[in-house]
Image 1 (cartoon, rainbow, N blue to C red):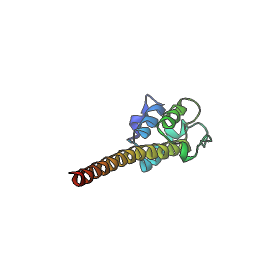
Image 2 (image 1 turned 30 degrees about the vertical axis):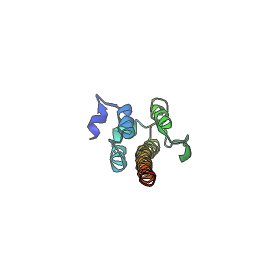
Image 3 (image 1 turned 90 degrees about the vertical axis):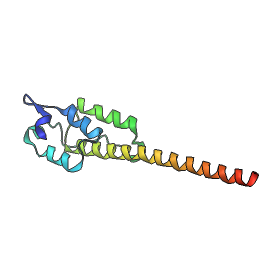
Image 4 (image 1 turned 120 degrees about the horizontal axis):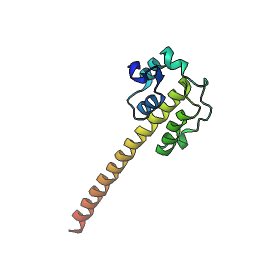
Amino acid sequence: MNSEYIIDGNVRRDKIVMDIKYRRLTGADIEAVCRNHDIVDAFIGSEYKDKKAKQYWDKDYLDLLSFAVVAENFNRDYLLYLDAVADFVSKAKYKKIIIAGVIIVLVIIAGVIVLTYVL
């Protein structure tokens, strides 16, 4: 797995970040990547200091966060934080779909009840 992230001796930081963002790389896989010495040597800093509260975690923040790799943020702490935000955002998307589905079903049931009593 790690070989896809190192090409010609260069760490593909952008690929690692995009794989985390799009959930192709999560939890234990990230830890495995972080054990690769070549990747660890490419780390910048040791922690990600610009963390925000969960209330600000949305798709726009995830996009912004994934661009941070280009600047000066690429380390284990950043990758795990990115994973947490990406996981939260992906689950929030499904929650919205489920809530919309429940609302539609309730509207249909209410309409049937109303029509039954009116007719």
